[in-house]
Length: 210
Image (cartoon, rainbow, N blue to C red; front, side):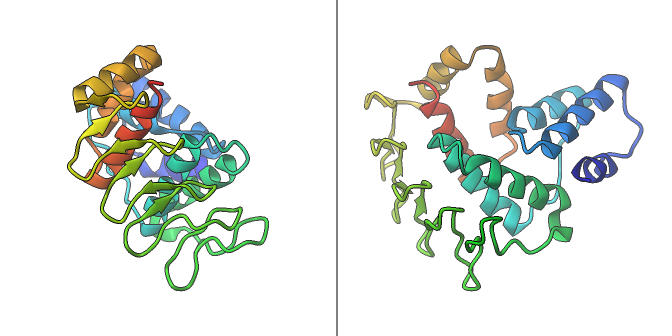
């Protein structure tokens, strides 16, 4: 079903290579896989800017998916990724996501989001949490790695997982050294993200360099 809707979003005539890329992306969404690099790949091969509508549920669930992936939460990640795929592909036509499959609250009526284990994903002051309750972003904007170490200070200074201060370029270089051939697509993804999403994507890339 999800693959059908993704295919419908891109119904215009395209090249064979482009059609194949989009088919792979649709398959990834249907299987609740991470499509981060696939979006960037589509942008390059199809020579267009990908402009899938972004709903509030899509953004919230995508953020939770990224934080669960960062934390290495293999139990909750597939559940969150599946919900994010539905919300992002169907956009405003997606069902209201209030309850997780295990019966716990996903989206409270006050607007708060919760992980399948019941832990809060964030608060109204902008704080974000990893699935087990550790802070990912503080009220002031400080970012933390899953191990509790500071990733970016209030002043905007980034730090590697080793605690060494680093520039953004140094963060990306460290990530590319670990990621290898997939690094280019991951970096290309940054250009199409809003500031908040880009910051969290940088956090994830930095963590991958450890």
